[in-house]
Amino acid sequence: MTRKKIRNLLRTESRPDQAVLAALFWLLCMGTSGARPHGAAVSGDANTKSDDGNCLRGMCGRSMVAGEGDSKMGVQIGASPDSGFDDPLGMLKDCHRRIEHFLHVICLVAERALGRSLTGEETSAVQSALRYFREGGIRHTADEEESLFPRLREDPDAGNLEELGALESDHHEANELHSFVDEIYSKWITAGRMAPQDEAQLVAATRRLKSLYEAHIQVEEKFVFPRASARLSQEIIQTIGREFRRRRT
Image: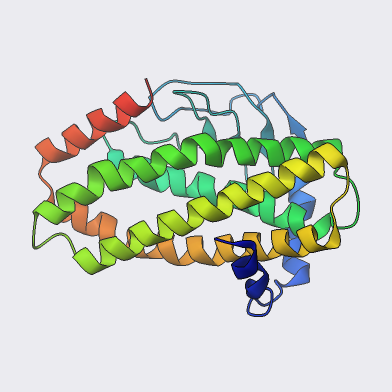
């Protein structure tokens, strides 16, 4: 996506509710640390556990560890552990929750920290989010486009080709937006301040990502994943799970 296209978004995107932004930003600023609460289960998508990275803790027992390495991405919501490779569709849903979480981070900071330098906590949170989208986000796209979607296309009763094509187009647009957001945030962190033009473009890009993901995730979780669960054999599901594992080892 070009800078011109991103600037055009400024004329079409509505401003988020400020009370909601303020409340979520307060949760974000509750604190970041590498530790997790005593007794909190943190499980990786490889049925492994990791304490690496920065932990953003909010209300309702929510804890997410933003330190995904080559094979580990810890996340804990309440007391439920992540799905394992024996449940690849569950893994995709777990990844959606991570995407939503880290998307909140980059959107909230873009909205609330304009005109000044980022605090240490904001910098840590943003860097963790950007790292997730560079690594875990790319793997998630590969999981869908290289493992799940081709199996659905092989079954004429399971795969809506137009629907899957639209989801792949979403992936391409999201990748371009993430590259742009990563570039602007990196400049902000390094220089301490942003030019007004960069500020406006960053807000526009993060808002577009938010609206894109909201629609994208809804289609996948309401239609694509249930269809895959109903139509794909257990043998195919297991094969998909093995492919997920290979991407993380």
